[in-house]
Structures are given as C-alpha cells and as structure tokens.
Length: 516
Ligand code: CUA
Image (cartoon, rainbow, N blue to C red):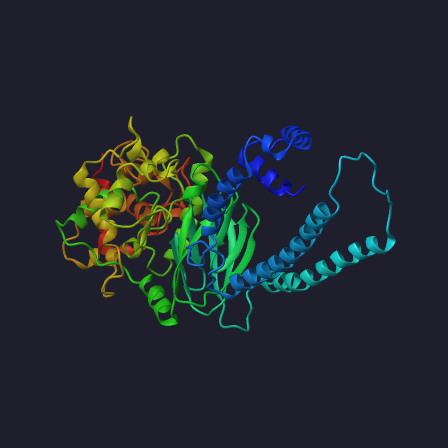
C-alpha cells in the first residue's frame, strides 16, 4: 500500500498505462515482495525527479508562455483562482493520503496468523461527515470561480478605461487582426494600449483555432460561423507571446503571434503610422526592383498598402473574395486569403511569430517557405512556387530584392501617397503603372491569372456594355471595378483605382487599348 502511488507513476513512466497491464502488475505486486518489481524504488525516484523537474521548469513565471508571470488583470485573476484551488486540493491530498498511510502502517498485519480482523460495516456519522465536507469545499471554490467567470465572460468592462475593439480571425496558419474603430488591419502582431480593456471578437475563416495569450488572458476558441468573445487588458508595457491552442492542422504548432502592449502615446503613434503610406522606392534601387517583382508574383494575395482612407473596407472584401476564390477551386486557385503586409518592415517576427524578421530569414522564407512552416498555403497555391522542388521560380537576386522591398515598408514621411505620386509627374509611364498595379492579376496576353487576360481589351471594351464606349468602359472598370464583372471572375477582388489620379487612369486606358 505504501508504495502504491510510486508504483502507479512507475507504470506510467514505463509506458504501460493499460488496464490489463495494471491489473497484472497489481496482481504481481500483491503476490510478491516489492523487490520483485521490474524496477526498484530507487530507479522510480531517479526517473521521477528529472521528469518532474523538467515539467516544473515550464512553470517558472519568467517563461514566455507561463501563466504564473501574469501581466494583466484577467490572467492574474485566473492565476489567483488556480493557486487558491491548488492549496485546497493540496490540503485535501495531504489529509487523505496521510490517513491512508497512517492506517496502512498502524493496522498492518503483524504476524503470520490467518485470523480475520474484526469486521465492520457502515458508520453514519463518518459517512455524513465525509459527504458534507466536500460539499462545503466545493461551495467555497464555487464563489470565486463564478465571480471570475461572470467578470470575464460578460464583455469588456466599460468602467476601466475606453474599450479598444479588435476582431481576431484565425486562418490556417496565421492570425488576422482588425481594428474597426481605427480602420487598421494587420497580421500576426497585435498592438494594444496599456491599462485599457480590449474587447475581442474571435472568428475563424477555416477550421477551429484557439486564441491564447498566456500572460494576459485565458484562451477562447475561434470557431467558423460562430463568433466568440473575450476581453483582456495588459497592465505592463512589453512584448508577449500568443499562440493557437487548438489543433488546427499540420502547422498548428507554428501558428503563433505576438502582443505588443504600448503606452497610450506609442499606441496612437502606431495607429497613425498604419495610416501613413510608405515612401516610394528610388528608381533603379533594389527596393524598386523588389516592388515590381512583388507586384507580379505576390500581390494578388498580399496587400501592402492599406493606409489610405477606404482601404480598410477594401481589404476586408478582398480577403473575403480571396477566400471565396480558394474555396471554390481548392486545387487550382492561384489566390487564398493571406496576411496583410502593410508596413511589414516594422514587424519583429516572420511566419506567424516563428522566426525573427530580418533579411536572411525573409530570403529563406520566400525561397522555400516549407523549411520554416510546413504545409503553408502560400507554397501550395501561389504560381511562383509551381515548380518540381516547390522552390520559388526566382533568382537569388530577385528574392533578395523582394526581401529588401518588404523590409522597407514602413510609415513614410507622410507627405506623399505612393499611388498619387505617380500622377503628379508630368510623364506618366503607363507600362510601369501596369506592371506595378495590374500585372499580378492581369496578363497582357490571353492567360487568365486572377482577372482576365487583356489582349484585345480595347476592341472588347467597346462591345461590352451597350451605351459605353471603349474608353468609358475601361474608365469605369478602373474606377468602379465591381460595376461589371466578366463571367467566371470573382467580384470584390479588384481594388478601386480612383486613387491613381486622372492622368494615370488616362495613360492606363491608352496603354490598354494598344494590347493585341
Ligand atoms: Cu490554429 Cu492551431
């Protein structure tokens, strides 16, 4: 009896946790002395101590994912509740185990006599006592448990500062964050102000994920077609780890994110930066080359310019349209919802919190994303990875340029809007305009990419809509893309190009009419 707990742990450590095996061992244990077991007491201790130490190391409050070193009231209430219940359980354990051990030693068989001890049955007083005590213990535990559940499931409190609303959306295998009050959209790195409650609406665009920031809040599942809610508050400025806590497919373990808790001032600066366009690259630079390569190979899934007014709604409808396009043709789709890369150069991590972001890791990611995140949809569906070995159809220099360009995406001087800038010059380069803005989705030949091939568009445009000339049809297509959608193509995907300005739109129309 004395060795039974050690014995049970020993069985589990030896990997024999099957009822039959346990029965067999229990039988052997009863039939033989302890020395006949397949391991000694000392071996069991030698096994238990390092394993327990290894497991307990994860509990150190300094650990990035430890729920003990809390940095917000929600997480600290949960930790306090855990510790309260832990000590009650510890006292119960010591009393019950103590009674068992005492009885086992005090009343052990002392001779070889086979005489049965005095037999007894039933004790009303004892039985009532050991029924009432657990009821009282559970009552004591229920009070703070229900209070915490009430406080934490009842929406973000309005009496602890202005609530920041965030919509968090789980995707295989990354997190999208939308700030509806600020019309900001980003991915994998969440920014929140310190000491202000943040109310989350949790959604999923594919399977069930789970949203968890161990040091700041508990976890809540992100379920498709069923919004869940959670609130949290960071009370210490810093960087925190978050991760998906529900098995969601092959890259589940690689679905993480970061939470940056800022001072109110820094948070406002971040928001305002997210509304400030990047400065356009200098002609002939690596950034410029990277920009045009990005436009041609990456931009049908990744947005990089959600800074202008109206771009927030546009990005949401693009994400939805990309998702619809992927769902309607999973095998052949060249598009899939993908992380928004606006001001990507300000991020500190890559691939949903997996790697530190720098030129080297970004080159590695673009070259062969599966070396960093197996199963990534980008590699499965982007045409640029349609190769025998799955590596990008780009030279090392081209990949390096794309990485340089992406790392250059940061809030600019604030004086220019990149697209507007193009129409302010006297000589608008229509080919450059087309390459930068259109070529990711439209070929100049007959090939369909995301949108139709544009060979002969000048002639077709004149015959498309009764009453509209070719010029009028093309202009409307650029300024109001969803007015007419060519059969077989997805609405909501093409951005509104009004922002290019009149000169650029005129130049593009002239250029489009030359395509044969
Ligand atoms: Cu998403 Cu696990």
